[in-house]
Image (cartoon, helix red, strand yellow):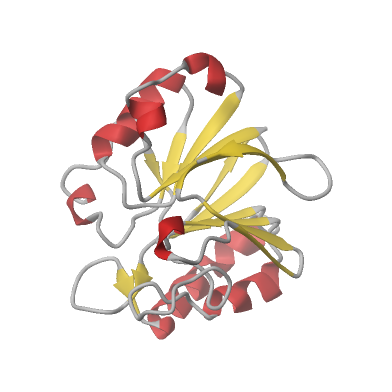
Length: 207
């Protein structure tokens, strides 16, 4: 199943020069946050597939005006074509504001997911906005990752973790990392990946 991952920056390649043929095999769109509502609604209408999203730290207006035609993944697990997907949006707390969390607050959100994780017998994909600590995060306080995401991967071994927040033009340009059994992908801009029946993720293209 091909997935279109988007995050943080609206791609002119998609928005201004959209070519449906290039994305014809995409079956699900996943947004890792900090994108305009109109952009997400555009993707849904043009590709005619579901879009699941989490909040970025700048998505405060989503509360009053959520992206039309899209489904929030926040703090729950949704299953699409047999793939179990959970969402934990927001960034590390660096200033007063919504969708920012301390390590303790993010750990508590993970604890509250446990009943659903048990009911669904685990998880295939974790979608976050923030990166994992020391695995593609930034060196500044704003773009620091969560250490508790490592704890989550230790406990549940999701096959993939998709995130945003750390722009690839910030100087740390590694898009893909691996932690034990989990492949971690930064969805900055856009990326198309395939969820295979076996083995590691296969990367097709992205910007």
